[in-house]
Image (cartoon, rainbow, N blue to C red; front, top):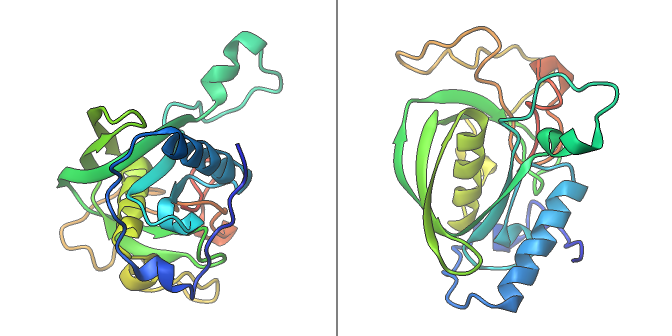
Length: 213
């Protein structure tokens, strides 16, 4: 495995539509392995092909939904897996179903330091292929659903710059729910950030909830 360079804001590759993967070979496996290593190294939650300069419909994401909220001081070796995120790989992904709507701040590894307020579905059902070409379906809710939508957008050349209603500003107070018609959320919900770096502390997120894609 090897670390890949992250394509940053301003590079025209981020605005291009990716091509489907047609060859499920060692080269694809290497790309997926490298992307996994890169997203972990960058403290991210997701990473799409064009973000590492590869114009193919592929992305990886880290599922932290089953990790306990509180980390013990010492973790027995036999329980380490319980506190590690699950790596998800999506090749030629397609959103089949979506429902609900929730606004949240999203970051992006390709847009360091920027956090856009974006409305996303609260649940999605995806269809994709794995690294061997086998088709599967996957359902996600909450921050993971947001992350999968974010990464799928990257494959179509759509970024947080295109979707954000506004960007986080520590000097401005925003109500994330203010313009979602009929949206009701409990206190503390609706502000997840996706991709890799932590959202600013003023946005009220914990390290687990925050991230960049």
